[in-house]
Every structure is written in C-alpha cells, then in structure tokens.
Image (cartoon, rainbow, N blue to C red; front, side):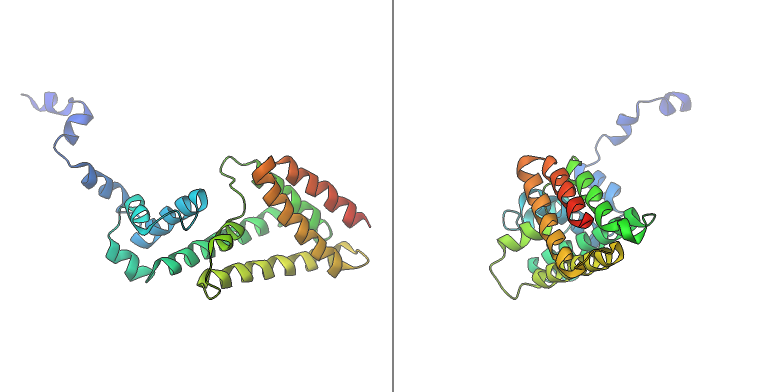
Length: 209
C-alpha cells in the first residue's frame, strides 16, 4: 500500500480498535475534572432534581472517578451547593450585563424583559433555587446559604432600582416586584412564558404609581 493510499483512508479507520471510553477521555481531557463535575451536575440537577440524581449519574456524565468528586467537593451536599453557587454567579453576571446600557430609573422594568426572555428560552425549567430548596429537608444544608444570599441580592437590586425609578414607596414596591418575579418564574414553568409577560405588565403598573 502506498503512502497516498494510507493518507486517503476514511478517517473512521484511524479510530478502529480505540476503546470508546478512551476516545471520550481524549475529548474531555482539556476540561478540568472539577468543571466537568459541575457541568454534569448542572445539567442533571436542573433537569431532574437533586434528589433524583445520584452521585453515580453525575460521575458517569462527567466521565470522572468517584475519588475526584470527594477530592473537589467532599460530598454530594457540597456539590449541590457549588452547583447553586455557580448558577447564582452566572445569573448575576447575565442580569448585570443585560441591564448595563439601561438607565437606572428604567432597570426595574427592564429586568422583567430579561425574565420574559429567560422563560422563553428552550432550556427553561423554572428557578433552580426554588427547585433545590423544595427538595432539601436539612435546615443546615450548605445550599440554603447560597439561596439566601441570592434572595438578598435580588432584594437589594430591586430596592436600588425602585429608588432610582422615583416611586413613592421604593421599599414596598421592591418587595412587590420580588413577589411578581417569583410568580413569573413559577407560573412560566407550569403555564408557559405568558406568565412572565403578565408579570412585566403588572410591574409596569406598579412602577407607574
């Protein structure tokens, strides 16, 4: 067989005899084990819930050894907390970028445009914080502190936005907008994104005074 004949072989022939698992590891080796575990946990926990998904499912999805999970997270509870922490960090960055070009006085209402777009996205499955907390029975679970911190962040942002909007009672209006936000997300999961649009309509009424 000539050199040219070898070079012209179909690419699949070069893969013959290579174990599938080895090929998968070659593709994922560029991604750190911790990130692979978090990526897998994010997909599975958000789609199926933290109680329904066991450690073995996460390990298989991440193509990682059990020892690596304990090395990076210690236990499943901490993996759940890290999953929520990454979700909250990403959400904050996303929201801040979305509102960056919006005048402060208009950010409260503009935020609900973001909610509508989120509810309309193909991967929307509701609020990961609400889902996770509804499954936790341990009051001391580390994920609860992450969720509490995110709730405080939203409350503070709404107070800033309603103050900038010049409404008569910014604190009360901020609390009402938090309730609208919660309802928009929960309602959109059940009834579809129209609930988020309804919440935006109500937010506009509230902010108009």
